[in-house]
Image (cartoon, rainbow over all chains, first blue to last red):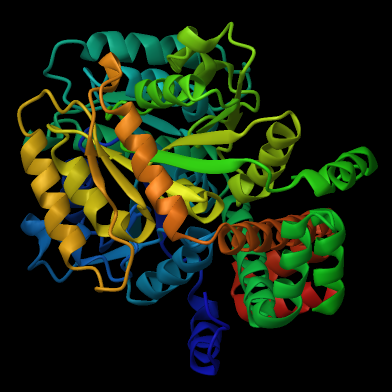
Amino acid sequence: MEEASASLREVMALLAPRAGDARVIGLTGSPGVGKSTTTSALVGAYRRRGLRVGVLAIDPSSPFSGGALLGDRIRMQDHATDDGVFIRSMATRGQLGGLSWATPQALRVLSAAGCDVILIETVGVGQAEVEIAQLADTTVVLLAPGMGDGIQAAKAGILEIADVFVVNKADRDGADTVARDLRGLVSHLASDAWKPPIVKTVASRGEGADEVLEAIDAHAAHSSLETTRRRRASHEVEAIALSLLRSRMGSVRGGELSRLASQVAAGSLDPYTAADELMASL
Amino acid sequence: MEEASASLREVMALLAPRAGDARVIGLTGSPGVGKSTTTSALVGAYRRRGLRVGVLAIDPSSPFSGGALLGDRIRMQDHATDDGVFIRSMATRGQLGGLSWATPQALRVLSAAGCDVILIETVGVGQAEVEIAQLADTTVVLLAPGMGDGIQAAKAGILEIADVFVVNKADRDGADTVARDLRGLVSHLASDAWKPPIVKTVASRGEGADEVLEAIDAHAAHSSLETTRRRRASHEVEAIALSLLRSRMGSVRGGELSRLASQVAAGSLDPYTAADELMASL
């Protein structure tokens, strides 16, 4: 990220009072579980409720801001001509903390544009997934039968981020097994903790979308919007501060950092002492 | 990351003179291309050359440091009892910049343990892949036929990080197409740029491993070790400095950051001004 330009700062100051108007729903899952199809089905269900919907599709594997590639991929054609739906693709590849820096600002813009609900969709891999969960009021984790290792590997981390589980492609063999495994996972949660509901869907036919919305509503009723919004603001402020610091380090890259890196590479300085010296030079 | 303990700093200071002894090879690719099998085949090929080999398997989707899950998954049984092979799994899920902070230090430890070559293996998704490329002397990008969207999606970013391409599972239909697509991509590189060689392998049978080593050697002869090592040190120092700054912000989380976040959440303060105030309080 570059040092924020004066105009960006100005826009953000103008948008600040509009923060937090929209409800933010995160959707995440392994490749192939049907995230885009599910997003499209949920958009349809929210539109039938008369709500204006924003969609942020985040692709952590693409280096291209603007996300034309991803824009082609998401199956949002049903909603492309609906002026109650705003769609934006973002790419974050290679940007350390890019998601937590840029996403809250995109949320604020969509919120100011009048969205009642904003869906953030991203692939459930590593840092992006964790960041989405930190930003969303409610996080929906999608699974599907027949993903093999994917679900096994995902299990380790999904309980910490899921507020709602969706088992998509529920018309396929193995969907009951996935749901049963999830019930087993959820049963180990502390008795006073929120128990993520498990909803089966066939998103390609729109089946189960209303039930997902009800599960999201149930979580919303249980949780404190104020808490999630303060958490989101905290992450945003921290990410901006880190980005600004990083940018300052970058601007000394030709000088102090380069000199320190040469010494570390040569083995004449250890990296912690070098980091101390770098910070002292900021 | 926590503020570095005094003992960690001490160990790093002792290890600093050992920096850069080992040659660092990054291996990355989508799930299912055969990364672990290829790593195992390359370890075997390096062992036949009489070199000591370190393996760092990095799992950005796991929140567990120590990586027992991943340790089970990697198919390194062939080398488990060979005392010329060191294997370490690392998990980085949820750690912003965790890879660039911890990996250079693990490299230094393996280097001090006498490794001539260190293979870093990670799944080719998002930030982890970019960080590996920044750390490695040579980056090997694996592909395989029949991965569908995976290869398409990967295309956008792989040219910027690949020094060597490996088309694994070359005995399967479609391998020639993948190799031809890669030749097409490579042909667009500037005429004075390094042209990544494209090597076909059947890693499960060890076929092509020696050819991959030759391609890595060719890249090594072409590139400057000094440059890649200075780049690695630069990223490491920057990552440590950012982690320390982040840790300081965390320690003010109960106080200043929390107060600022409340104002941002309420819309009475914009996030950039809040970030300025946070930095001023450090």
